[in-house]
Length: 127
Length: 134
Image (cartoon, rainbow over all chains, first blue to last red; front, side, top):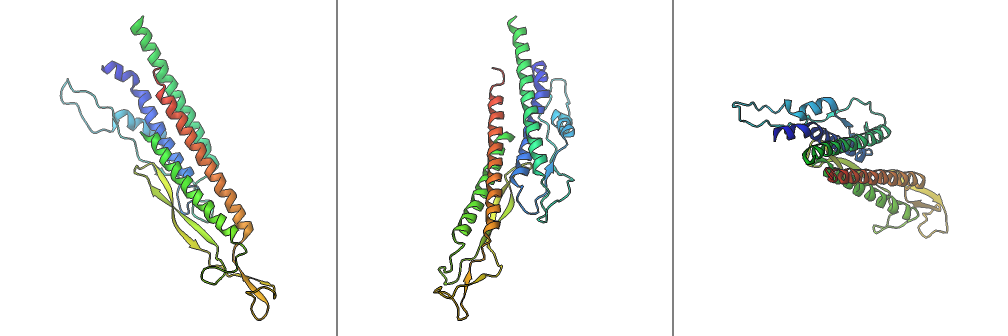
């Protein structure tokens, strides 16, 4: 089972981080008119590294232990974008919409890659 | 599943923007109302948005914190034949700035549309996810 798990682990983590990033961008867009709201962003590379399980804090003490890959996802931080308006809101709507589309497409790319992996595995199994 | 939270976030924004549109509609409808339930001219209202946590760290929705009354002074126009005119012939009109309200209306409707787009994108992403392995 571990081999199968490992085959999908990377894309699964990538999808998880992508969907969290999507949630973050949706929050920024939803709050584009909220006074004093500060836009949030996440560092995708380090979030993916965390999600891949380097930060679980669990160690294997026996050979038969299963590896835990439900890594935590690093928490979002306030992005360093300057506040533009007088209402203290730092959301740049154009940038957020761009990021939203970019993230949605990359999510779809990950889904397509998982599909490709499934097809490859099936062709190996079915011959 | 984070993507389902997108629906909550975008939904809260849509609710807040439609309440803003509601207030704008009231202001424009009452731009000429010289008499209210308290006998005074109508006063413009504005919504105040507030970021609201939606249960997870990365999702922040919006809610209408309060509806505040515009405290700017009432406009006075000269119209001696009006029943509410004072002894000098001036009538107190509501402090509604129709141009401001039109801009507010456009802004609210654009924000609403943006959030509808967000919801559609999240929906198509979820549909894609459901098709994994098929």
